[in-house]
Image 1 (cartoon, protein in one colour):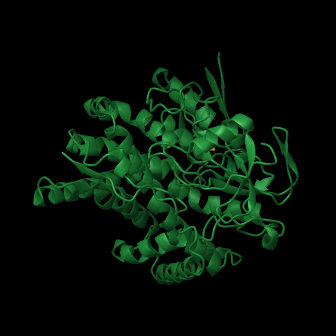
Image 2 (cartoon, protein in one colour):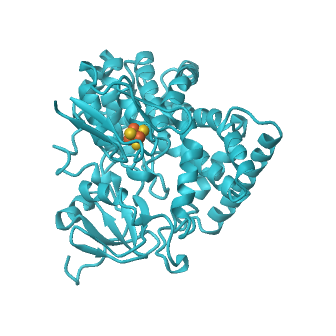
Image 3 (tube, chains in turn brown, red):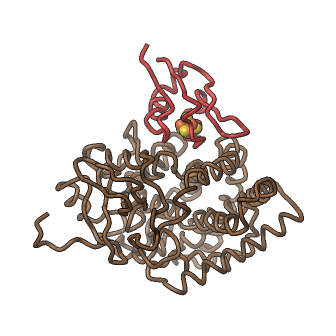
Length: 404
Length: 65
Ligand code: SF4
């Protein structure tokens, strides 16, 4: 890029909900790692190529903390993924503790055990969709409100041990902490969110259950360095993550399947047989956040000939990496036949999303159930009428009106 | 096809188990990988290869026999 050109600023605009911004490819053609400005206006590196994204995800010289946090580039004015988190000296150790504490609850055997329950909750959501359709025949049903949103929330509530009845409260908090220019309100919401978690943890301390918050409370009893604030922050993070991430994948998966009738029919004809590959392809193609995942360099590192200095912010765009033609043939084509389909939707390396198995289990349940129930489902509006949320950390779409 | 796993590297993500459940399992206590078969069942070769490539910790190795 010549010096006369302005440094591009995130987030980039995209044509519609299923596309990703063309700027990513334009940047990747110049280099795997580019100079950009964050939504907050600070300098950062943006990683757009698959190989380098994988390399940095797996490189221990990058972390979420910063050697001098007050000097760190800020990403946004939300209250998550906005800047450095954790302590530079103890990050690795704390991360290990977190994984150890949570791994059993999110493990594949636990997910298998949870499978039947997820089926039941899915059926409940599908019944609600049917009821809404029957109550107002001919009118579109908002799939986001009746399925894509409530299902992941129901599931994460069960897993964590959070009362579903509180959902309006923590939905509101989850939304507010993730507003990219939320500023003081995002911070206030984070404080409220932690207070809410602290209240729940107190209740579990008095009356432990088989759930993740009770597990965390039990760990805390043995390890006083795991503070109330750590616990509240982690609990809020997990509850937040259970909201928009899987919800977005459900909504987007439906969009991918419905925007091409042949694709829908192929899936509806053999949902069980198609589901695993289809879910991987939905994961690969769904463009989510406008920024990518945040890391800070803990030492000077050279990546593909680019020198990244200690303390520099690095945004890894899984969205862009997952559409890198060097790793995926015809990357913008939705092709469930790809094998292997090794995408970076959950990141990789030590920080790989702990909810990956949970998300996969939910997605593998929801799509077959949905298309068995409504094989003739179609979008009730044009793709261009589906607005993409640009001002949210996890992106997503507001509504997916469907009918059948 | 021979499989080996390095439990020391494993970060307990369980991705292998979900991809190839007849080849891999996870320890109940800490979630580390357990190899169920050092050769994947015929129907699970592609899945085992995907698990090798997907493993976030690069803890799985497949060698063609
Ligand atoms: S995918 Fe890799 S890191 Fe995850 S459980 Fe299996 S071996 Fe361990």
